[in-house]
Image 1 (tube, rainbow, N blue to C red):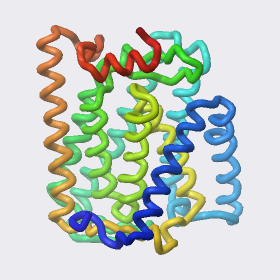
Image 2 (image 1 turned 60 degrees about the vertical axis):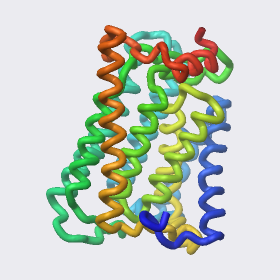
Image 3 (image 1 turned 180 degrees about the vertical axis):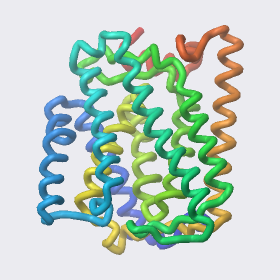
Length: 309
């Protein structure tokens, strides 16, 4: 932690754990209940938006258009996944196009930002939302990692709805290799480009999605990720939580730290890409038209946990 962050105390660490647990809990409650999903992802964002616009609530994030666009795009993903889960749309083969498309667009947006930061910020600058930004070669490494995160999206044709009462959106071919590669890339992106929020908008909600995937329901990572991200973004528009001392775990934001997170993400994403090519050739399968990881234990466990055998 010393290389990447400072300000970590016993109190801030306890709050960090509670912060992560909160998102895991919200995700799990809404995953298990359609009514809770409607309340949290449909009703609550409208109420909070009204309170922010009227000035009752608000944070620095809510003062700029990017935060609002991010909230809308994240919620759009959740709404699309809910349609797949709870309507006949989930039985249509073309429905699988939506998850891979919206995930690819969100990654592409971040990739563009990495290259923009590299080209624009030759010296360190504090931007309008308080983030310190410095462009460097690390942005190139992580931009390439983001592109690989899109390229390695395999087997989306196999997206389906679980055959249990929760009706989760399952992507069996999205195994732990991709999930870890994406998590490392996204953390590096937040650290590089949204520095002041790296612990919370990056590490905390990414870890929450991993916990949900590994300990609550496997094969549903993209749904976990979308739900946690969307409600976190809505919350961050309305509540200036980082003005509270125990939330002031901030990045060191040194060049060594920037290189470290970006190169680790790059190495793992290159590894995921090479493994995809190797598996595709060995299995003689097209990753755009077929599931290629069907022989892996992770794939098979995802199928089993969602009663898709």
